[in-house]
Image 1 (cartoon, one colour):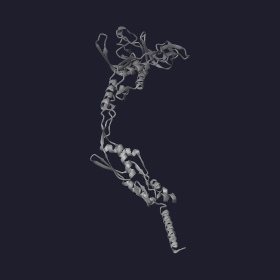
Image 2 (cartoon, one colour):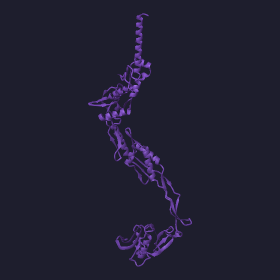
Image 3 (cartoon, rainbow, N blue to C red):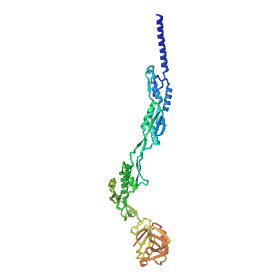
Image 4 (cartoon, rainbow, N blue to C red):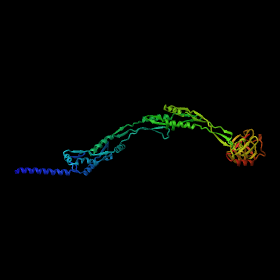
Length: 471
């Protein structure tokens, strides 16, 4: 072989060795570094390690603030303040993805790659930032509203407010572009007028309609009483919808049913006196009749219909009659069935016999004092008859009143007065020498008794003792 050929062969071998060495160096050097032609958001990161790419991306993200111009006002918002979160690790992973094999390392060198930053957005935080901008630089719109007055008996209007709002979508678009480019950006935002959905006029129309409902006359009679809702109650029956008042049917029905229930009368059991053997001796009182409203639902429907037509309503409850088949039996003392008052065993009571001019004290059917002679009322001022309860006592008092002819009388220091009905009492009569008669010499209606006997009956009776006055 000639020297020339050896020289050419030596050059080829040297070139191959250099290329091989260079390839080895390239493959080793870019094993864990960004390959030539690699960039993030348009900026080269070639040759940077993964840690360096993370730091660089974070730095660029932090600098990519948004300058917001609103009229003459300027403010700056970092992407993080708008809810943006950079995933620098994932971004770096995408940059280094071709480094997984020697073949891909070599092929990537001839294919430049630009990686978009990987990020996420907290849309709630972004909206909150925009709302704060509106609150600071603009004015939120407010719908007109209808509320109850402080007294709860009428409706009043809170006027609508026209809003001045920022176009939030423009800011969002600018922020997203800045996040992709990892560069600062400026956005001009204008305040635009925003009309409320509910106008003051519409709200006033609804309030006027509601107040018309409150002013309607509504009354229901049960034949004795009239049931009328208050303005506060009628106001509570109104729901505001759109530009008119709607009647809450359930509340109206509940009120009518409550009024009907309040007007019902429960039947009462009768009362019978029975002796110790259980025999019915007498009827003290027949059972009371009850009444139950039977058309509450119909009346409620009529009230609702009238109110929906903004008309007054005057109605009536109809009733079913209810009788009681029950009896309350009252045990009386044996032997009391023939007395003026059929007392329970041991019950204290006082018998005033106007025919015999006597007063007697009983416990059950047993007489414990008397008969004591007395003087009842004169024919022109007779003593009342009936069964009563003692309700007032005075050891002594001055009695005043009118004579039958209209003149006044006054008797001082009347002792041991026990009142059993209005101005009628048993009391001592120190001005009388004898008792046991009536006629023109009778009293003004009280039972005149000897002073010592009046004292005994005063102590015996107390308050609440039964007194039976009869002929």
